[in-house]
Image 1 (cartoon, rainbow, N blue to C red):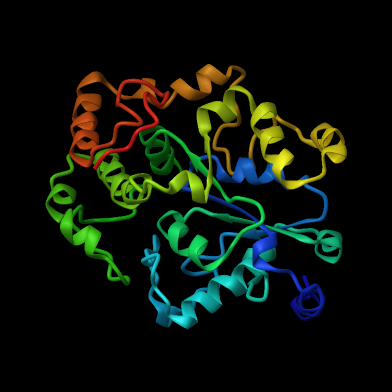
Image 2: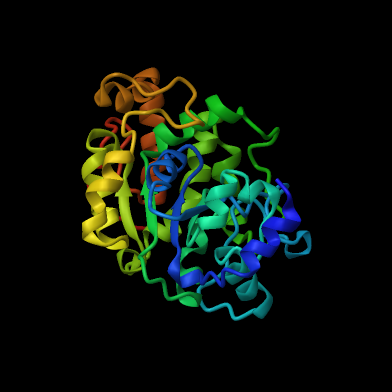
Amino acid sequence: MNMNRIGSILANKNLLPEDGLVIFGEARSGTTWLMELLSHIPNAIINWEPLHIEKGVVPKEFNWGDRPYIPSDDRYKEYGDLINDILSLRKYSEWTIGKNSWEGIVNGKVVLTKFVRANLLIPWICQNIKFRHKPILLLRHPIDTCFSQLKAFGRGTNDYGEIPSSIHNVRFLQKKEILKNAKNDLEYKIILWCINNMPLLANPGLKDLVEVIYYEDLIIDPRKQIRSILERVIPNENIAEVMSLIPFRAASETSLNGLDSSPLMQLYKNMDAIDYRQKERIQIIFDHFGLEMYNAFSPYRVSSKIKL
């Protein structure tokens, strides 16, 4: 793509951050699939993973790290300006804009941003930007998510007690011992999942900030879930046409093995790959963090309650 021409086109659009639609979720939680389904919204421009450490748009000197946290009452102007520029596509890279066709960029009017590194930023972002369309938080069972992360990315560390050097890393320091005591890569990933998600899920005002979508619901009945989103975002008279364009059972481009023929098989395949003793150890981790929404023995959420 000619980045100079793209820059000129985007500069003339006057896209506003509050007018976009944002998807939050963990890596390997189904966010790419959800984004692909929603990319059929008329005139959507995809804003792909702008917080990626190497390919995204966060200045190195900000030291946000791989899973940044900023307190909701933070008023540091440079941070606020950055998130506004990201969500309005005033700041972009060839990576973040690369999922779009040339025609899509020219005609684009709605920015569809997908994050897998921003869950802990949700309260801060929503404090800074008053979205017209409530952002989406996609939740997938942590065992399912972390098992998929290991299959896709491998381990990625040599020290279970390693503490990221990024800003606001106290949460890792507080959990250094449990990180060090992980018995295997899956337990380590699940501990990280809890560290990076439980503070958000324990927020009593979370559902005022985002629309929570559960992966198991999306797998079992994607049409129902997508329709409920579209009803909030586009005029009712356009919903049937948009729904007719969406390939609901097509696998995501980041899928490792494609979608299983049965949604139930899709939900159970990672859970069934783990033995009972491992599940018992994972349940101890869940109990330590106060996770009540999921347990280690079922792919379904068992409660909507989170308690620290």
